[in-house]
Length: 45
Image (cartoon, rainbow, N blue to C red; front, side, top):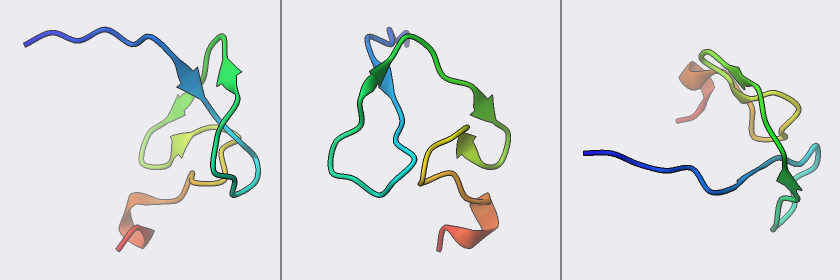
């Protein structure tokens, strides 16, 4: 199985849509740096 990322986004606030970004930084166990949804994996229950 293969995949292709065509778009990434983030938003500092809890919004319906997220603006497209040229790139993002993924933080292990948290998610996308600077995104309102970035929370520790243990807290996503």
